[in-house]
Image (tube, rainbow, N blue to C red; front, top):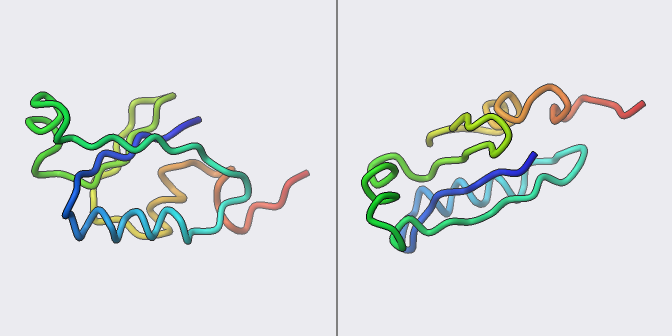
Length: 87
């Protein structure tokens, strides 16, 4: 699984979401591709009022801000809960 993080410059909420992504403990790393929506009119039309948005590349599911660590773990699935112990 990889995530796409839709964001843009000068976005305070995007900065908060990025900090949450960086500081939320994960049992294994999750690759994140950062996409600045300002580079595409189509992305601005789709995400302009919703950013920051996380999108799973495997399912297409999207998580709109606001979200917290619990919502992030739920979005990523049970294998990414902090209390999950590897076998």
